Length: 478
Image (cartoon, rainbow, N blue to C red; front, side):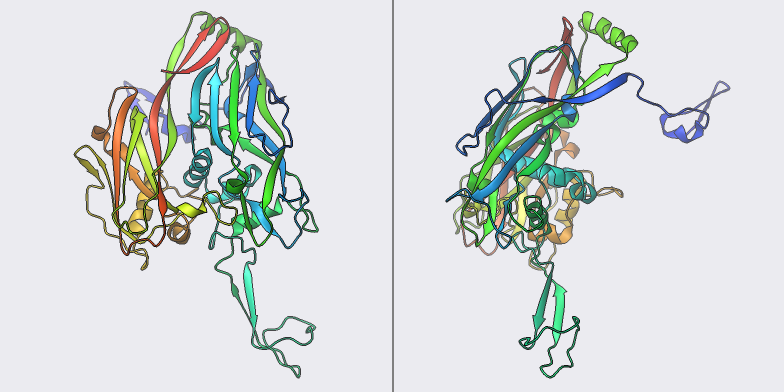
């Protein structure tokens, strides 16, 4: 609202609509902006056994913007037996958990952010809770991620057609009912098993005839490392380095029927944007740097933990998570069959609810949720859990974006149990580096008929320091 203070009329930040004579703001500081290729220290080999990639951006006096950089991945999925491509009928592509299982981001040889394990799960779940459907269908496809639908398998038929009688001759037109001598009645319906995500990913790797093509994906750094998801600042002076470890073929590939495949990475390039800045602005930046200016920034780190396998007779699984955190902000829990891991014929990007009826999270003598929630997945009585997931990631009142998946896919493919700690700050430690013990417990009725893992996706608030010295900008953990 506008305020009348001592006879002067002022506008608050929310009343920009009244600035009818204000010219639109433009970026007058950046005068040139272009991407530079940074390649691995050792040339990428086409040997599938090459699973570690180290890319170093040397010290430079130019300004770069890491948060807007991306990894360009080129490669192909071929038959493991002889290295030949797959044919049009072969149902083969990659999973949404991506290509990497571990990763580190270092500045001046100091660790800034990392995933010591389960990087593919972190990449996938971050996309699930971050990206709206429109993004997933546009920019998301450019990084090889497209939300699984239907049954989460390899069914690429959007419509199923059934006939009551075998067709002896092709009709001139496709009619619902036939009137020829060998009359045929047709019925068509939406295929509930159709996986649109797999269909899209498979198209990326096929030519017009359906034969294998080399894929090319641009994976944003801010999708791989939490720090650059939250901090978008220019850098200069210090060396930046990325170390990535590739997932196994079995954890990358998803197929049905076709022979075993292997992933051949043919090139890996770090595309880093460099900018030239207006001389007057740059002079002020150097002046600030010379003064040794420093500022504290915050970001939300994602760390993934996995339990040991739960037996198929355990109807009351408990998972104790020990995490080093400054402040936990939110936790997601997902259950997944053990046997989908290390398997090309299963999908590690979908989860199961196992008919859980109750979920709790305990920290000391505090328990979430505060009230007793009972759910019934078989009768779709889980709207409270769906609402909790939306609210935990600020999507419950989001009228423009939302998530990449809906209520039905939440039940069938992504039954993610969300706990929001931002409403319960008293449960969190305040000392940096404190060790936090959190215990998840579920009640499952009836008991699961297979062994399964429990994944915990822990989002926590971390502090970093942006400091300057000798014409350099350093990003470091506090």
